Length: 512
Ligand SMILES: Cc1cc2nc3c(=O)[nH]c(=O)nc-3n(C[C@H](O)[C@H](O)[C@H](O)COP(=O)(O)OP(=O)(O)OC[C@H]3O[C@@H](n4cnc5c(N)ncnc54)[C@H](O)[C@@H]3O)c2cc1C
Ligand SMILES: NC(=O)c1ccc[n+]([C@@H]2O[C@H](COP(=O)([O-])OP(=O)(O)OC[C@H]3O[C@@H](n4cnc5c(N)ncnc54)[C@H](OP(=O)(O)O)[C@@H]3O)[C@@H](O)[C@H]2O)c1
Image (cartoon, rainbow, N blue to C red):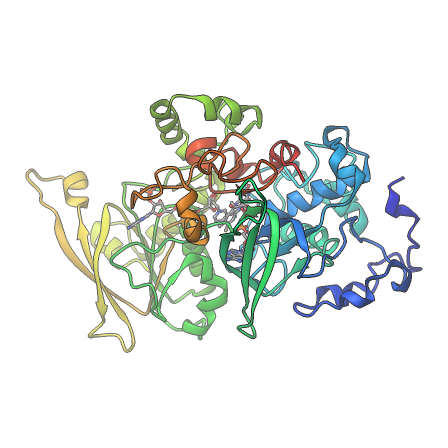
């Protein structure tokens, strides 16, 4: 039995309505937090609210899967039921933890939550299973609690729909409503001037902006975890703030506002050759039957992601050590070699489905190169967008100026040269991936503590345990900043695909 199991369970066995006050995005009422004043609580973690003005042990920036896994691991450690998390410092007292999340509720890449989209990795790499299969936070326990375990088994899959996995993570997140502040966008992390004789930094000030009211809040903490995920990467020459040039991460939030009429013959371009681009291209085929879509890709073909078993071993947590200690040039070379497990690639079943869709056009619209020019849906290989202007032919539309190198590769006559092409469209979806460097912005006021920080291009470095390296002796050993989800160049791709359960190894190293 877990310590919280003695808390009375409501009669119908469902999560009680008392969770709702916790879910309110702002102004969580700390006064009502006395255990005795709370009605029967199910699904309440062992972490307790810490008033904003108290010194925290740890503040996590962002509450995505990375921070959620930390929350779950803290709970499991306090629970005392996970032998891999026997951390005496923790078991003596629950850490004063807070999670600051800018979204108004837990959501997992909701802009790409397309109907039917599947997970890319086995559900077993969830918040707990590979660390402690007996944890309450396993995906299997979630299914059991929701009454779907038997039917899920009948699906005969390790790859649930993304919508179900998001619901699983939201269920986990609900346990921590007391310690998560939603609508809080962290804007700055500043080392605090030390009052101790040693002159070492012992705490950090975390400033966040309430995205609804604009109010700035400040919290002090000894440890900070930055787990803010990726930012949309919109490469030049695409405008970053155009109502009809949108990054894939915004797709579900925006497409129906631009492409209002599902039967209209819109012209739409999608740029990129990863999973996001392929999913959006496929979605448009299915949901806009009269549209003309063009998928512009850099190379000659969409390529499948490699999730074959030998290659998949690169995601084993034990590989983080060997990746970290590898010579930098070898590490860079192997990261490049392993890129096809994750980036710029598409799951084979979706590839095959898209191929079939395009093939069907051969039957319906003709099989000649001339007929192909007019197919509603086409993949345009070897294309690079070099300029983006307003379209002179489509109202509010966009003109893409494209360098077409396909003749160099695909022409059946000698001496073919590249061509310029213009494509006029109603909207462009730029599925060009993510940048994971937001910590550089958040830590800009700490650069005086960065070794070599006076060099303009210097970047923060991390230790094996993901702790940011500050100049020697400038920061006390029991304070610091950790990075999660943005250490691929030093720690490898393991994190990116293995969800987050590897964190616990690092987490166990973090003195609270
Ligand atoms: C569409 C899509 C599908 C994916 N599918 C899979 C998959 O099936 N399997 C897999 O292993 N990986 C998948 N990934 C990879 C993905 O990186 C991980 O699933 C996971 O989301 C990483 O978790 P994270 O917490 O590091 O980042 P995120 O999930 O990005 O979470 C970061 C959180 O921080 C918040 N945040 C950001 N900045 C701030 C700030 N300044 N202040 C406060 N909060 C902030 C964000 O709102 C967000 O909630 C997918 C990625 C995408 C884009
Ligand atoms: N169902 C799901 O679970 C799901 C759905 C979507 C995404 N995901 C995951 O999310 C992560 C990100 O996927 P993603 O597809 O969004 O991004 P991605 O894999 O990083 O792919 C981005 C693509 O854009 C290309 N690109 C970059 N700059 C470009 C430019 N200027 N012009 C043309 N193309 C350019 C990249 O080319 P290069 O390869 O040359 O860099 C790459 O092919 C992956 O881990 C993926 O598996 C999962």
